[in-house]
Image 1 (cartoon, rainbow, N blue to C red):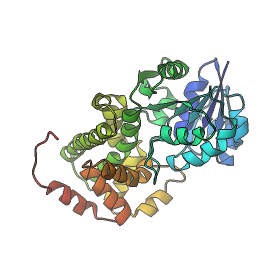
Image 2: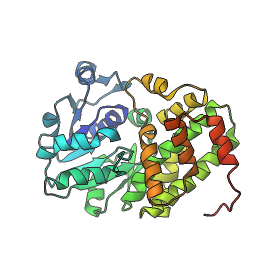
Image 3: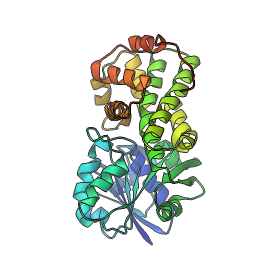
Length: 337
């Protein structure tokens, strides 16, 4: 019986707990920051707050106590919002062991440091004098569809092949297929940056634009994401895979995408603060990632015009109409960078 701790009981964390809890070989503890979430699961076996309608397997125990969640855990699945990653791992560090497998499922960048989530985790745990066995899991995977058991394929990346194979074995079943990859940079940046493009795709829909506009946005969005991935040391072929094109298309076109939904409301003229307030605790990672992505692109001297315009909309209140006008009237150039 493997002991697994899932840290973060939002929709995605709960869905992953369901995947892991389907296996008789796993005992899963799901850590929730909100007491009402833990109580809801204890009462009805359902996370009524973030993932209503889906029954959790009996092998899942919810708790609001980190030490209880982590007690003797062999695998720690990190599913907290990116802005909370460092603080939570600082709290978790004293009880984490060098042999523990850590699976980062958060798609974002840390503001200020511009670090990917596995880098944040490693940075914290190196202070405990050990290098963690860490992997990043990403790919096209809406939480509700994963929880429902729809066939889903994702990828897990680590520089350590033993780690990726162990994570693959832990998660893989007939409804959740996990591929392995050794390009951690590409997998993490693909998962983080696609959220920004998804907000932009939502803006197009909110403005009432058609398929031409969204198709162009996805294609050129993938091009600029790929440029930054390669500049940071990732591989171009990763961008053609599940953590690149797959996740980008899903998040830009699916109605379940929180990032796309934020963009839709921006396109309709709503203020960002009002949109976020109406999300009732759910997180659209792209809102937090955009500033860091712009900083990373400038640091690497990579041109990312769509990301720059999304930053202007989110941070400076720029008109979406003007942002599109500025994108469309940039100097003519070759498609191939």
